[in-house]
Length: 146
Picture 1 (cartoon, one colour):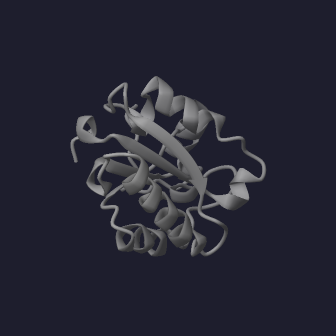
Picture 2 (spheres, rainbow, N blue to C red; picture 1 turned 90 degrees about the horizontal axis):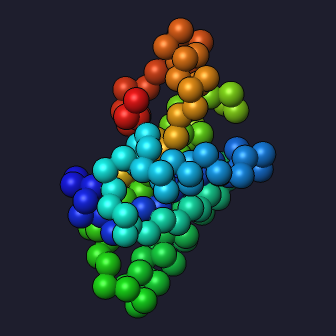
């Protein structure tokens, strides 16, 4: 996937983590084009949504609605959308370990016609250091540009 060809980014956040996290760091990383968001163009649009809670089934309805609005309100194709599963979903962090439903959510995303799926959004320096020390597990699929 060429990030310059992406016109819309969706950040999917853990519903349970969202109850105590504003999502500021992930959104800020997008607008600053840091971490997993580096390489996107300045005109790329950004939207966040939650997984809807365990096991992520609500994501299907959110993405279906988004896909319909995308088609009606824009000329952006689903192939020009990237879906980032937030770091709170795909990594071990201070909230919890990697979500056991990651693969299920990826299937839901694909079934809704979105193929550009990226694991990761923002990684704090403290979390990065703890991961390097082995305090948190390191999952190889997660994309961070440190």
